[in-house]
Length: 247
Image 1 (tube, one colour):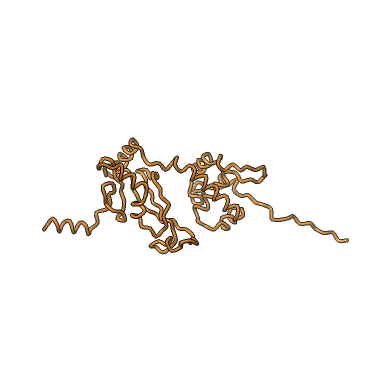
Image 2 (spheres, rainbow, N blue to C red):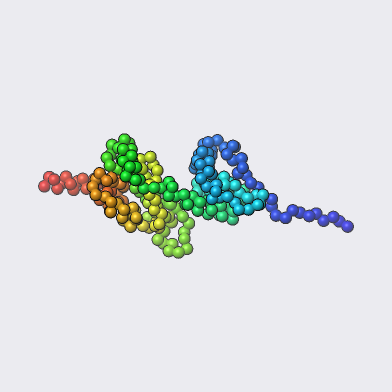
């Protein structure tokens, strides 16, 4: 009787991230993950309790593996299947990991994105003045279109003026480039000025701003120039002003 060969069931799993930190140079690492090795170590310490796998399986993903998978996805915007093929994981695993790590990061959002206290505002003002000589600036504001896949619901409202689907994220940063306010609630078709006018930040400034010494935001010409928002003085405005002064 001929012997029957018994083949192993399924494809054996391969995990290729365990030695990534040692194999890549600092430049190669940043190019792939948009974070430095020290930055990834910081994230691991911050998120390891949230990412701890409640399982006794031998191949449960470590927190560092989950973070690297997620950073690779954030850094490239590639499909889950592409990320999985590159790093040695199934696309379903990549999808689950990205969702879990994103939720873990969001839990810590308010530890880092914090509107400055009165004392902090003075430090920010001094920082902006040292950089550019502009007094009483407490932040720079702008919108950024974050590209997304076309959603199934209300698809047209997510098409921005550049012609692609996005979320228009409003952010304020201080003189060191640190975020102090983020609003990611609006689709790409919404204008920057509308997002600001309907934001909690605008309502807060409306209540608390009494005079120039309370501080102002710097914005581009997409925003309205008001008592707590300074915008560029356009050439057309300058011509109108000079013509009016000259009679």
